[in-house]
Every structure is written in structure tokens, then in C-alpha cells.
Amino acid sequence: MENMKETTVPSFKEIEQCLIEEIKKRRKNASTRNVDIKSEEPSVSRILKNTAATTNVVVSITQNNSDYSDDLNSLRTYCVTGNALELEKHLIHYPGDVNAIFRESDDNTLLHIAVKSGSVECVKVLLSRGAKPDVTNKDKNTPLHLAAQLGCMGSIKVLVENKSDLSIGDESENTPLHLAAMSGSADSVKYLIENGADLLVENKDKHTALYLVLNNVPKGEDILTEILNESIVVTKPSSEKEKFYVSLKVLCPKTKNRMAVANRLYSHHRYNKRVLLHPLLKTLIHVEWKKSKYVVWYRFTSYLLYLLMLTLFVTSSPESVLSMVTRVSAGLLSVHVIIFCFPYLLPGQFSTFRRISKTLLTVIPPTLTIVTVCIPYNAEWCGVSFLLSWFSVPFYSSAISLISYQTGMFVFVTKEMLKHSLVLLFVLVGFSVTFLVLYYDDSDESFNNFWHAFLYTTLVLLQGDSLGDYKTFGGNNTENAEGKDGYVSYVTEALSNMRFASIITSVLFVLLAIIALLNMLVALAVRGGEELTEYGQIYHLWSQVQLLYEWHEVKRFYRRIRGAQPDEQISAQGYVTISATAIPASMRYELSVVVNRRNENKGPKLTTIALEAAVNENISALLREIQDLRESLKKALKSE
Image (cartoon, rainbow, N blue to C red; front, side, top):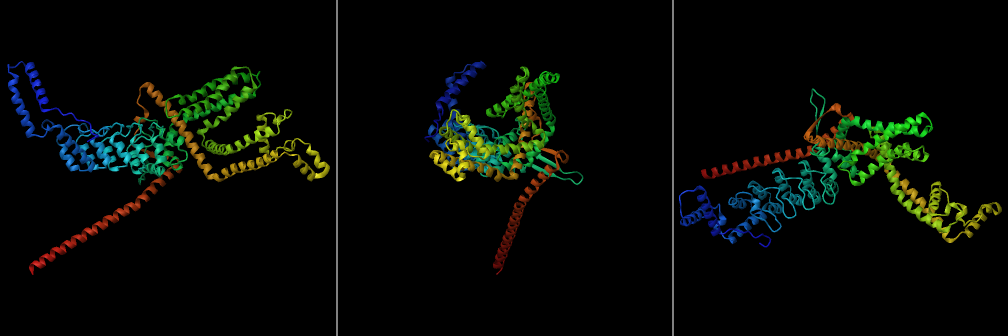
């Protein structure tokens, strides 16, 4: 074939010569009787020929290169056509690694070919004959990569059962789970995840398998939700309270931070509400939070103490004793607060942008405070450090659920306002420049530069007023017109002295400003209170997950320093028992509801299976009766 590598088969003479040389070495090393080696050459040849004639083990000795290639072509044909029986017969002649006997030009082995053809039986035969499941081709694709790409569930199951590596990446660093998600095969994705495929591995495009599952696979969120549902078991013995068994294999993979998957979900998939509010995820967060709550509360209390000292320092007299005490205390606590950003410097799951932003948001306020307490009292430095420090309270308020919920709702509204304010910003900038050109006046601070024009236009818009009679009407003293000839004369004079561009600009400004404001109000009204509440809950869980992830990163860092085993490898990866008293009643109810719904969904399927079994049994009984009737008819005919 054109795509087959040239296979160099040693000739019979070459093999014979090698054997003669080997005999020479052995005779020399053993120092045995002096025998002429040439006299033994015919016997060696005879032995080799007889062996080749009586056995098929050394087929390549007696066959020429053409016959050998034809035989390999036959093996390839059997894999392509799915002829597992003939493949198994011919593989008897090739002991050892089956992958080594045949390679195409792109380094595809017989196992690759069998997977591409969709022949599960051929895949089983090759694996049973010693084919290694993790062999790669030129594109670094293993057979499992190809099976996942094609969505062939049969081949995927056989390869996974034969210990095929789920974490190997191809040329683009795609794992089998990446390729299964790209192909949109829901069954393949679910099977790979349930068997331990890593959701957080990134390919060259920096896309995790989790991202592709939720964005590429049809109903990917439903698949992940179903997997989480099946990870919950509820038992209720008669003598005890109900117990919950939850599998954390998907949410807490080995060798990774226990909160890594949860952190990725809340950080990058905030709109997949069904997954983010899943009872299993909430249970994991609650259990881990109980273990680490004292550390989190210490962090929050330290920051409150820092705020108290800073507030007393800013509000007290610079010459008082209280100012000196609070100056030193605020400085020391500022250093203590800066230490809280240490987790962002550790190598982990944080992106560069998030690492920098979180570090700046947590470091800048206490750093400004340190500068403030180290220099003589300065009102401006005190004001800026005080304001930013109080603005940073939401970053530390996750310990209190009520504050965290309200903070989440506030963040949600702020984001929506900012998104819809972009249109208003364009309107303000455009009109500010227009008004600056139309009404430029060195003597008037409102329109002598762009910044003043922008501020003046914004204030007018927020007040719901017009630009004012003075500028709108070209600077004429129209305020006296109403007193002379009444309001009609005032309007007439104003319009007659108003330039055409000013009229168009003023009308457009009013219309677009109204539209922009209404757009913002409508956007917030459409959201409704229920969505705000959901976002507040998600934000609260996300805040907890971030703190837990950071705390686990610190623990993992110190374990690596001591050379100890990571905590994630010590903990059990199977089902974890959770007593009823370990979680709130509301969470127990949610877990029970998930299990009940899952059982209800399985009910119709079990009923269908039972019906099919009953129908098959009835058909078998009818067939037996028909057979009995035939036998009785035959006997009756014979007797006649």
C-alpha cells in the first residue's frame, strides 16, 4: 500500500550467517572441542529450513518481502472490515506487541485502524493479543482519542476497561474528554467523566474540558447535572436517622485542590444556574466551610479591627494620644491584611488577570494606609485610604451570609447598570463635544474645556433639566423676555435667536438621554426580584468557594514544602458519609428531592423493561406451544 512504511525483512542467508556467528562465539567462550564451523553450516541450514517448514512461528524466514506485506495487508483489511475471527487466526503467528508489526505512514497501528472502522470486536481481539491501548500516532492520538472523536461508545468502554489513560493530550493538548465534547457525543462525555476524566485540563486554546462540555455538547448542563444527581444516595434505616452518601469523584479529583472544580464553575460558568445551585455542590461547600470557618472568621475579624483602627486614626485629632496609638495599630494591621493576598501569588488555577486584579484590590487599600500612617497627618491621604478600605469590605464579608447575599445583589445591579450605561456614555461624550463646539466660551467655566463640558452635560442629564436658557438660546438674556411680553414672546425670541445646529442637538440630546435612561430602568425591571435573589445566592457560594480554594492552596503549599502527601490524596475519593446533623434541614430536603426525582425518572424505564420481559416470555411460551402442536400433528400423521 502507498501509506504503508517499508518493512525490512532479513533474508534467509542473513539469518543463517547470524546463527553461524553466534555458534562461533559460543564455541570460543566454552573452549570446547575444536570443530570446523564450516562443516556445520549445512546442518544449521537444514535445521532452519526444517523449522520453517514445520512451524509457522518464524514466518518471515521462509516468506519473501512480498508475501509478508500481503499478510500485513490482510491484517489491515480484517480491521477495516471488522472481521474479528480471521484477524484472531492470523495474529497467532505474531507473538509479542501487536502494535509493532504494522504501522501506516501516519503511524496508525492496527488498533487505531480498528477503532476508526468502529469494529469493537477487532479492538477486543487486538487488546487480548497484547496491543498497548496508549500507543500514539504522528498526531499523538491514542486509540481512545479517535474513539472519543467518533463518539464510538463500544470502543471507548473497551479501551477504558483496559486501562487506557484518560489524561493523555494529543498534538493540540486535547484529552479524550475534550474531543468527545467537541464531537457533541453526550454518552461519551458522561461515560468519560464518570470514569475519572479530568474536567480542568486545558488545551492549547486554554479551553478546559469543563468549558467544552457546557458550551459544545447539546444539553451539556443537563449531563453534568445528571452526573451530580447520580452521585447522591440517601438511606433511612428504621433505627437511625437518614444518612447521605455522596460521591465527590467528579467535584474533587485526585491530586488537585478539593475546591478546584467548584472554583472553575463559579468563576467561568456563572450562568449555568442549575449546576451552580445543585445540592451536591452546596453540600460540598457547606462541609468544607465548616472545617475552615475559624480561619475565615479570623480573616474577617482582622479586617474589621483594621477598619476600626483606621477609622479612629482618621477621625481623631492628630496631636492626641489616641491618634498615636491608632497610627501604630493601623500600620501593623495593614501589614497583617496584606498577608491575606499571599494565596494569589501561589501557582494555582487563578488566571493572570484575576491574580493581578485580586492582588491589587486587596493590597492597595492597606498599602495606602501604611503610607498614610508613616507620613505626617495628611487629610487627602487619610481620605483616600479610608474610602478604599471601606469599599473593600465586600471582599471579606463572605463569612456572614446575609451581607454576602446583599453584596451579590448589589454587584449584580451594578454590573447591569454599567453594561447599559455604555450607551449613555457614548451619548454623553458625543453631546459634550458638540456642546463644547457650539457654546465654547473662555469666560464660562461650564464650556471652556471638554472635561467641564462633560461634567456639566452629565449633571444636567441627571437633574432631568435642559442645558439652561443661557447656553441653549445662544447666550441671549431671554430671562427678561417673559417679564416684558409674556411667555409666548419669550419662546418666540428664543427660537428666533437659536442656531439651527443648537436646535437639532438639544432635541436629540433630550430624546436619546430619555431612551438611554429608560433602557437602564427597563433592563433592571425585567430581571425581577427572583433573579436578583438567585444571583445573590450564587455570589455568596462563589465567595465561599474562592476563600476555601485559597485556603486549600495555602495548605497544599506548606505540604509541598514539608514533602508531605497532598491532603486530596489522603481523603477518600469514593462515597463520603454525611450524617443528617452535619447539614441544615433545607439542604437535606434538597438532597432527598434530587434522589426522589431520580428514582421517579427511572421508574418508567424499569416498567418498560419488565413489560418487554413479560412479552418475550409470552412469545416463548407461544412458540413452545406451536412446537408441541407440530410434534403432535407429526405423530398423528404417522399413526394414520
